[in-house]
Image (cartoon, rainbow, N blue to C red):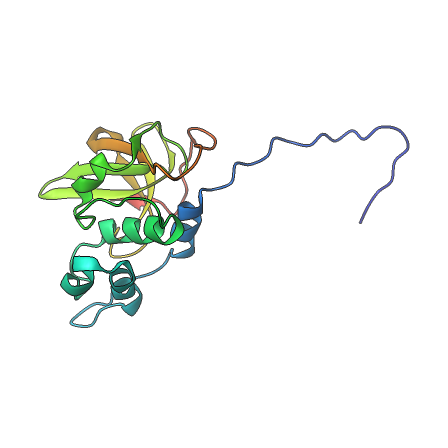
Length: 179
């Protein structure tokens, strides 16, 4: 229903919401993808490796192999085909040298240390102690998870990703769970 009033409107347009970078839109589109338990594997996850090609296409045979780096490579490789990915993008820690250093903004690549390796995902927000990360292989799925800020060793932006949009996002989504 449209209400017409005489005189100037009392409503003002609010600030525009920054658009997600294209690779973040691809990441959000994949939310809910799950590993297949047991000896079978999710064909979507295996398909990311095949589509990226190279040595990973032959190496990556099942979704029991860690796939957070594969997920990041899929999202960026599909949407920014001119972007140079890490040579071993399956290694989460290899992403610490990816692109250029940046501040936390929607879509920034976050790299974390953990016992026995690392984790990589995309910045979706933060709270006092944690980044809200949209990533693959978080609880065996693509979802939002809280990851402690103290574990973060790199915040990166693709060289071909254009200007960073927006800034930090104070966020504690109810669906975020610890990683």
